[in-house]
Amino acid sequence: MSFIEILIIGFALSLDAFATMMANSSAYQSKSKGFNLFAVFTIAFLHAFFCVVGYLCAFYTVFLSEEICSYFVACIFLLMSVSALYSAIKKEEKLERQEKIPIKAFLLQSAVTSIDAFCGGLAFGAMGSELYLIAVVLFCATAIMTYIGLLLGRLLKKGLNGGEKYVFSIIFFILFLRAL
Image (tube, rainbow, N blue to C red):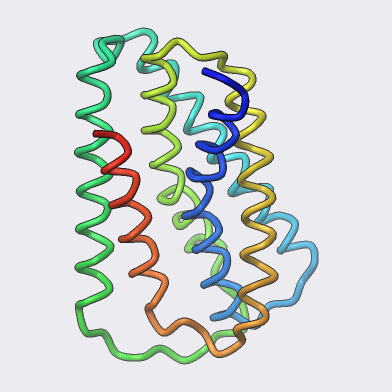
């Protein structure tokens, strides 16, 4: 797999981190530079970490078969897409803007958005790609996209009112189609 392909996949896998950060920075009013730096690097680290774990699972288990791995990854993305769409459609009461996102909620969001990186790691492991290159590219791509999401979310200021869930659903569905 070429560097350009890994780079494109790295940016594609970081789109959910971009959407999450954009939604958080538009919904919460925190302007702490320390927290923003923490947020960007936490999400980037978790994406790279989950990808490495997925790679190792694929490399050392039954997922070594590329066909089995691609169907497994496709099923996970389809379930995530349907779940995000259901969550977006389900009527919920509008929440007031809070000053800061609770750290526990942020860490949970970061871990959940990294599940696709785990699936990407499964696919990379099945193909036998270079692990160190994938981890570094994914970390950098996610850090860049998360920072852009942070800046764009600040520009929105009104919040997305649940619209980010539609974005998640579309992204996961595209990744499902890609995995097939």
